[in-house]
Image (cartoon, one colour):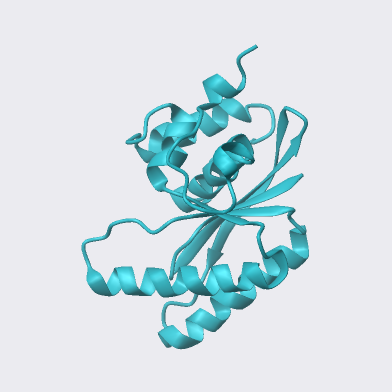
Length: 180
């Protein structure tokens, strides 16, 4: 099963792909989608939508996990993030109805690092340890590593607690997932 994780943004967005094969998790690819900030915001939304369609076409994921909205200080920044995220979700739902899931940032961090308020460096370190022989470079941005963490979070939590694409409050960490 291929899982696409998305860290949404209106200027750039991270994506991460993992493959879940039984209990084995493999890194496939990750990167950043950059959007032209000089363009009119409404035009940028069209670019965001098309770039998400292209990701789905290029990688053909089985399921998609998106980070839920976060608290930001600026109301206008929150509005733009919400609109960008909406364009992304609309693009994904076009081909993956009932296969799009969302997770809160704290749940993602808790699942990957064991601490819901972990900093970005801790997330990066956890990912590098998990994929130590598969990732041979530093992440381009935290958007990229966050998206990969979102994909991992979904791979560990899918099918639990009646996960039907709604926000989940519970979960398990990497440490718990690999016990046995």
